[in-house]
Length: 341
Image (cartoon, rainbow, N blue to C red):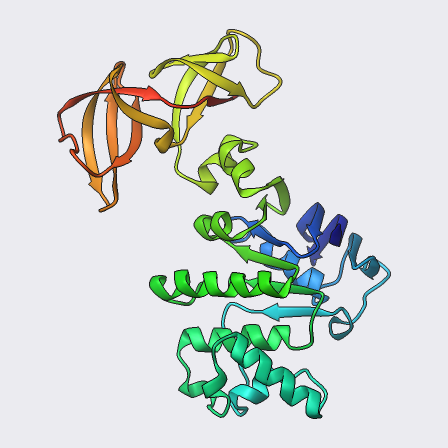
């Protein structure tokens, strides 16, 4: 069931179009990520759902009710939507407890709700502290608790971990999304972090230039990217020139089984062959290549290799018994390649 439905959404800043015909369903109780480069319209989409920007064309529905169109604009406070910004944006003159309960009516139920949420986000002992006494991770937990306090039907998260250091970001984002799932929340996360979107989301939407290029599960988007640009954006790629055959391509890695991603391609046409580095493995009986660099990362390593004819490729391998630069190795491909025009 779709909890948020967006149909033909256009948003402009002055005469400049920022969102161009967005269609998107956000399923109830699921986490959906919007992934794309800076300036692609991700935050504009979030702000439009929240009611902070007017809609030029199209509609936004939340829980079956129209909240935005060219003629309708339900105020943000009446949409039942929680907002977690990039920085915690806490009220500096209020305690942690008062920040969490800011949007709640005063009374016994407010105090109980604040206590429950503080325990849920691991801040029970900090309710009397001021925001200036909190770490970055603690402040972001307060921001999340504040967004959840009124029991919103949707939680919008605008790159909420971007300002944190890498180790804290990894730990906190897992805690936050585990919490959202425990609460059964419907959530929309805006991010430019591919790993974050792939590891945390039930569904991913990839945007570029104000348009949606692909929607699907993380596995679908990673393993069957709609375009070669999407493939490059959501992960590392190996790209080779090749020629389309019958359910196969011929390229520098030999004759490979392949999936055609462009229906306009015909047998014999030149294509761009796309693989992930982990789909290529060392194999003594495979196509010969020369190792040109080894990037050691502890648990694994990325090998750059030169194929016959001068093409470059990469393979990600477990970091044991690594070859050295200049060694000759064999390569084979463990799964079907992708072919694009």
